[in-house]
Length: 481
Image (tube, rainbow, N blue to C red; front, side, top):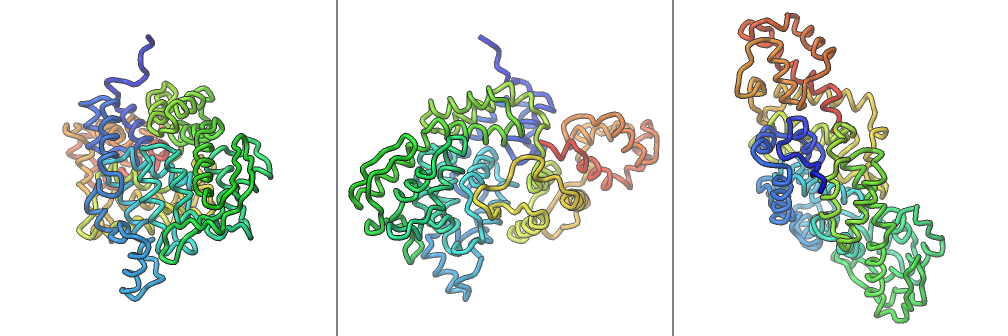
C-alpha cells in the first residue's frame, strides 16, 4: 500500500499550508497545536466542532452580536418595526458582522471555509432588494445547516428558501408568467454547469417545473398549487408526468435531487472545490477523484473534501493560490493574534468597512455566481495599497479601541534571538512559515540599517520592529495561501 501523502509530523511550512487553505489563516495557537498532533487529528477535531456548532454558537461573543439571526422573518420584521426601522438593514448588517467575526475568530475554521464556499456557490447578495427580513435564512437554514451534510439536501432546501426565491425571481414565477431566471441559474451555476450542454428546452422546463414556489407576506416559504405549471417535462435525463398541481412540489424536489446526483454536477462541484482548496488550475486527475467520492457518498460534502485534504496534489500546492482581499485581512489578524476589544460589534463593523474598501465584503457579490476565486480577479494596485495600510494598522495597533493585540516582541517566539539577523529570521518564520528569499532578507536587513550580526540588545529593531512586521506581511509569501 502506498504511503499516505499526509505528513504525520508536518513541517512549519506544511502547517502554514494546511491552515492557509482549510482555515482563514494560521494563528500561533493552531500552529502550536499542530506540533503536537497530526493533520488528520486536526481534520477530525474540526469536523467535530463543525457538527457541534452548526450555526453561530462556536463563538458566543460573536453570536451575541447577531440577535436577529436566530429569528424568523416575521420576528425580524416585528423587531425592526418596533425599533422604528421596519425596512432598515440591521439584520443584514448583523449577518455581515457575524460572518466576518466567525471567519476571523471561530475555532470551527474548517466549517467556516465550507460555509464560505457554498455561500458563494449558492450566492444570494446580502442587502439586495427584498432581502430586508429574509436574507439570514439561507445562511442559517441552508448553507450552515447542510455544510457538513449532503449537497442534495442543501439544494432542495435552497429551492424552498425565501431569500433564494426572491433573489432569482422564483417567487414571482407562475404558470401564467414563467420566469426563467432561477431555472437557468440552477442548471448553469448550482448544478450541472455549462459543460453539461443542456438545451434551451431544458431551461424552460426547469423553470416550469419549479413554479408554485413562493414567499408569503410573513417572509416564509409557501407552495401554491394553483400557480404550478402542469404537463410532461424532460430535462436532461429527468422525466416526469407532472400531471397534477398538488404533486408539483414533490416532483420539483425529485428533479433537484436528480440534478444534485448528476455526474456533471459532481464534476462541476469537484472543479470548484479544487480551485478553492488547491489551485486556480487544479489537476484533472484530482478533480475526477473528488467527483467520484461525491457520487459514491451520495452527494455528501465532507468525503469529497477529504479526498482533497489527503491528496498528494494538495500537499504539493503550497502558495499556488492568491488570497482574496478579505482572506488576506483575516490572515493578518490571525497570525498577529489580534482579538476583539470590549465592544464586539465595533470591532466587527471595523472589519466590514475595511473589506468594503477593497470590494470584498462577505455575501455582497451582486451577480449570482459568487465572488471569483482566481488570482486574476484580485490583482489590483488599489487593493494592494489598502492591504499594506491594514498590515501596518494591525501591527502598530492603530485601532486599539476596537482590537487587542500582543506586543510584536512576542513574535520572536519563546527563545529570544541573539542578533538582528536572527531576529529577522525568527519573525519571517513566525509570520509566513518559512525563511524569505536571500534578496528579501537582505532588503529587510538594509531597512534596519545595520549588519545581521548586530546584537539584539543594541539593534534598531527597538525602534523599527513595528515597521518591519508589516513589511514582511506585505510580501508575496503572506499574499498567497
